[in-house]
Image 1 (cartoon, helix red, strand yellow):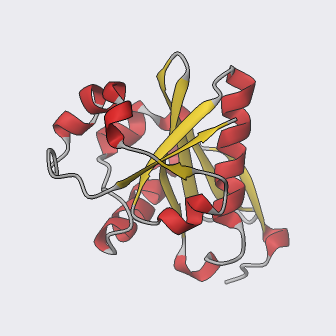
Image 2 (cartoon, rainbow, N blue to C red):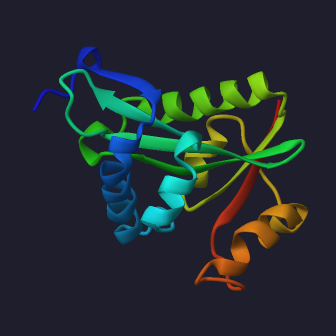
Image 3 (cartoon, helix red, strand yellow):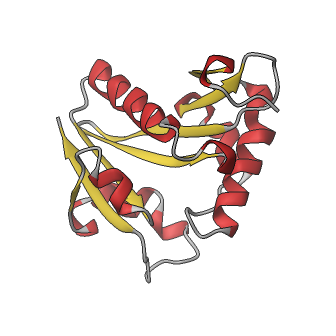
Length: 159
């Protein structure tokens, strides 16, 4: 399996990527790195996703989503990179691509709920209280099995 940078690239997700994205997310959820996502959620939010793809057409090996939450707020979610690629900058590239899209859309506040705050701190995100995101709570958190005992760490970047 070739994992060199030359054989990988970022692109928008396509419908055929959903099973691979689901697999990546479920593996990361088992490692308690993020919350699991259902197939239904992935199909409903496919346009939010970017993937790390292989030039040889194999399944994606990383993903990240940018979800618009409100008129001035977006969320980075579902960031995962295959274990074999961790530490090579693909997570950073995925997040930076999503941040660039946020700016293109005119959204200058981006948050994340994470179990890996050090990674996001290195990108310029700052710790904040979840209480400043009521839109997120009403849109997603009420359906989460961990609600109201959320143990994710809220972080925000203002660009």
